[in-house]
Length: 339
Image 1 (tube, one colour):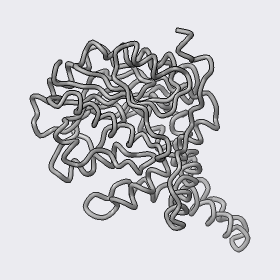
Image 2 (cartoon, rainbow, N blue to C red; image 1 turned 30 degrees about the vertical axis):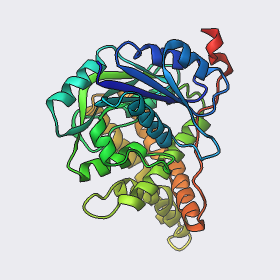
Image 3 (cartoon, helix red, strand yellow; image 1 turned 90 degrees about the vertical axis):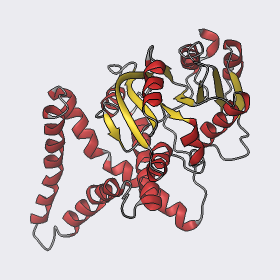
């Protein structure tokens, strides 16, 4: 595939990075790995496998968006004839057959800027948090509004919108897809296996941080592109404020004057949980157990998402620089020397 390149980004991914790069190195013309300050030998590993590497200048605030942009620039510097770029996170492994499938779709559909497929969690049964990720990524196929961090993009489309917004700490892929669609491009989600992801999310606090980051992304996305006709993430933002703040505050502040009757408003939570559960059982065909778990966490997520939204607006109003909200920690058992 001489017209396809791959950009992988990561930090201290260890053995997961090895699996990531080996899954792609022979399937594309060139692989560029962008590292953001690893201390586990990731750069040396990538070079030994045959990837070109970019070491980010960490004196400039790091974001995944900036890393992908720099990887793309390096890719075109080395191979100017690259037409399609597969982006992948360093904790993901590209599934056999995906590169060919994505390339065929983009070649056959000149109005499509990006295609993505099914990202699966490698160990969904390890923790409930891994399972939640796996369910979250099982989205409908067909034309869609956005793709995630793993996708194959048309280089010309990526260049037309000047890539990802490097200032965004989260939600950079959907934000760029907004700009792509505004230019007339389409985004497709294919019925095909794309990548295996290794979340290693084992604690409730990690899940909370991840949901907090999502709330931050919702707030910033709505602030940037919330006007008509896009209304980007406005619905998600409003839902967060309603369930995370308005409803509980209303129920509690009205409890005294209503002699406690206002607390009945809180029954909205189990009703919302059941509605989500019913949808995932009937429309998405999840098992009752998985649908119940996912529905419960969807409602619970409103609180960390609210925290993330407040954090965004606080920083925006005070003119403060955005800082990463990270849920992953370096795993000493995952060093490259052990593989």
